[in-house]
Length: 390
Image (cartoon, rainbow, N blue to C red):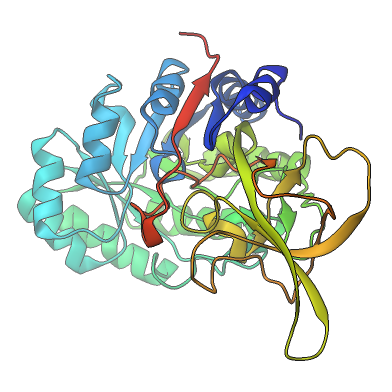
């Protein structure tokens, strides 16, 4: 994917390192999602881009927020969205976290254990809870199969415990893994949801909400071997539409459907203007001579996900000339601050010099949230938002 002309103009005009967010592109991405999945309610996963202007932009489009902490809840509240469009989507919550969220007006909580249910009942009485099912994570760049979610059998137990404790067992949720690359993962999750809805109907637990979670992929990155990621997005949407229809038919009461996209809305609408720190060639211990291109930003200040993917790089001013294969790395004195050099090298200009601009594309997801506060003394990137319908 190519950025808008406005973003490319901003990259070209920039004289310092910074990330640019294309608000108009994010608005269009949101509009496409709700058009592809009629009836879906968006709860943006804030961790993907905790930037006030981005959150305000999405709020104006009708989105709500999936918040994972009291601080995120507070930031979501500042956008002015109704409180019923904010839920506490983290199944891991301390007593203090639950009490703070309830005090701020939150009444929708994710859960996956009877212990968590007991705490919510005590500290957030009368609230609604939705139970997160575990998934395999197969087909995703980042599977989420261990830390979160419970089995279908446990979900019945959890929701019955919620009902018995005076809470409202309001729904079920899934997350098929971040940057999910297959439609089969969605199909499997929807099949399990349909079966569980039928079981809960028989237990007298009539759910009002199905939360399809996150996992929708971005389109503009490369895998760790440098191959374009090409998820079957049209097929994924078709599977989701069919699954929503099936769940509606299975449920004894009308269902609302939520989704928690993060990277899908923002990844391809963020770009970084960085610089070359150094292009060097060193003989490695195996005797091979290896080029390394060090950038002014890396894993700790903008490019956190470089362990599982490659960001697309553009070298303005180097349209011609000879290119050489190089490992891409960030500026810090840390060996993790580099692409997986065993997976694949990147073609870079042989005459790249310190200070030359480099444009890093499709890096709008997690660029801000994962940035350290100055690891090794390298500052977080400033950001600029462009466009939007404000």
